[in-house]
Amino acid sequence: SLDMDYPLPLLAAESGSFAYNTMKDRVPRILTKCIDTITQKPFEVSDQNVEEGRLDCQSVIGQLSQLRSEIMTDKSLTLLDDEIDDCEVWNARFEQNRSVHQSHPTWFSSPWLYVECFMYRKIQSVLSKSNHMKKFDPFLDQKNLALLQSLPAMRNLAAFLDQVLKIDLGDAKILGLRLQDFLQVSLWGNRCDLSLSGGEESSQTTDPHKNLTTLSEFLLVDCSKKVFDYLYIINQDKKTDKVVDIILDNSGFELFTDLILAEFLLASKLATKIRFHPKRFPWFVSDVTPQDFLDTIDILGKDSSQVLGDFALRWKERLQDETFTLITDENLTSFWTLPDPFYLMKNVSPSLLQLLETSKLLIFKGDLNYRKLVSDLKWLHETSFVKALRGFTSTPLCSLRTLKAEVVVGLPTGVAESIAKCDADWMVTGKYAVIQSNI
Image (cartoon, rainbow, N blue to C red; front, side, top):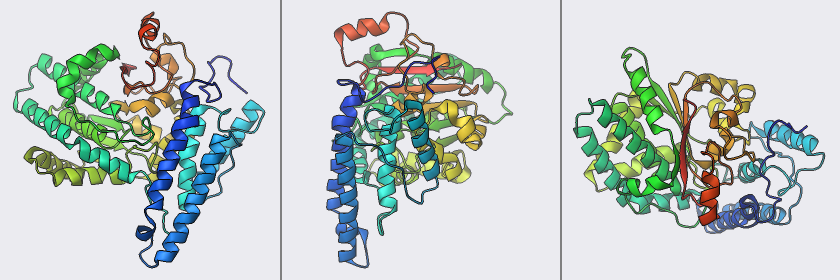
């Protein structure tokens, strides 16, 4: 049954809503782009036999085209029938949706968070049942292109961090201001999101650090000072391990800004170890997979710029000595590709929650993580961030999010109304942002 103590979930059924436009236009466009990518690949997917590769591709394309048509005509969702280990969990969510809404889940009538995630899971299902494309990433070409186009901005940012680390960070005030800089760099790095552009080109060509002052007027809530004060206080105890977890969002430039933030936290001794949490499958077009994470560092290592090369080398060493840890154990990653809000983690993935609760700070990147933090419900914008977390965790956390969906909480009274007057799309374009914390 629906819980009457809470607002309703965002739905794609509301004509004109961002959820509606996503399912009506963006999602079919993303699938079309997947199909185009696969159409160009038959020679690559099967080393043994070109004809076999061609048939495999044809079958995958046929199933993805059918999926696209089912979404566009608001057909009922179907149960998954693959061998991936989260299949039963997904099918349980299907049954739960059916019993809550007393009707068969469809692409527009079911909660948007659930159907949007289900679409990406369905792509995985189709690929997993193919002969030669089980590990194929249909978004890889787009991610690589965005990465290459962002290299100039990455060189600038690497040079900026390099300069900062040469200056003594002993002074608390300077350290605090620099942390705020790098939190904001990592925040605005999130503007590049391939699912927002329907998989069209999206890269960062400007240097965000130069823009931080201009961008700050679009930062609606900024808890970065609180985050610094907290890290600084625990930093006084030199004996304890200070683990910070970064729950990743997009690959490409955003991942680079996360690595830069992580490097700053370690180099400034605000943290002793960083754990990175990727998605186990290609997800929401541009999300980081374990392979993307490692490939990115490799690509940076081959760049002509000395400073990028140096950082890439340092990050490879960090992965060796485990001051950087990339979480790849599927018991610990599978939760991130479920449709579940995070307050359910304690029931659905207790081992992940247990790991996260050994952390000193959880940094959640991006829009999808934010939607899951606050359950993707139609909260009043003034609702407190902590209330919207619904008891998720007492571990200190911080969300770095540019707004790309019609949900946001924790705003001061009147802010939403005054922005909406001059910018009707303020919640969905990635132009505005929040840094919110439960600290």
